[in-house]
Length: 193
Length: 212
Image (cartoon, rainbow over all chains, first blue to last red; front, side, top):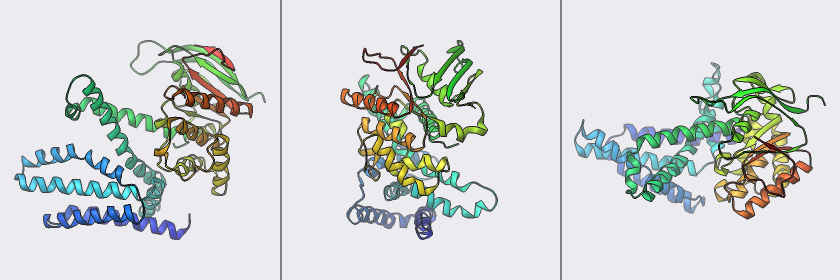
């Protein structure tokens, strides 16, 4: 990979971090413009760069339980309107991140992150490994979404409502660790130590 | 030549938390170039044996050597991976990345294969599994049989001499099963040692069958 491409990937990753971090700290009034920006970003990726945005929309629906949990959690400490806005903030960041992940291959994400972490190399940290782990964790989200769907299908077949899958935390937790274990084996068979 | 085999020497293994051993002082020799079929009923230990041979898990007692490399020796991990790797039962579990090129090159990067060799190795491996020209396709677009082919190609690109395939056709349709078996026989005819686990033995089964 050429140096120009590596720098370009690093800057693109920096763009993601900057946008996502900014929306965390900016006042609530910026959530609406940020949501509009995310929509325009997705439309650009879809119609200019011909990227498939259907997986982004599918992954975004998986954020609904997190939105509900975030609202409920925040309501104990602040009023419900601020709680809703905070939860909305998380959802918009999530959707922007999914769109970003769909715009670039996982290995290129790893290359970009490796560029950002370059200073850590000077103190002996293996940035290539760290960046690859971070990039692979991005691919874990659709895998978990599929697991949640499998659980909800199984529950439905046993005569219960699908939404009860979201409260079967023990099953979900087990599946997360199981999938992580499988991921570890796959990495091992491909020579990743 | 003396070392070109897989040797299981007094291997004992038990899953964590289990009361009984899956294997107790188990001995086995698998010669290079063979087509081995490890057969057992469900829960009979064939996947466990595949994982032991591949070095994914270590035996509690005894040793496993692949061409002289002890699978318990962490320092020889990369040498081991250049010799032997595995394709798992579920096609979804074998692929890590969205682009086929990325998935195949990942193994080459880990084994520190020179970058100049990537294109040729990937192209050759894809050609060997009948998927030439698929480098830039997405793994999400593939059928189950195609995913297993790509997984096998990924292992071939790494240059492994021993290919362990754990029930590779259990999640495929009839057509997919036929394609994968034909591919494995063809690879074996060209020198790759195949170690296949299955719980279904067909009368047309080739190779040496080992019942567990």
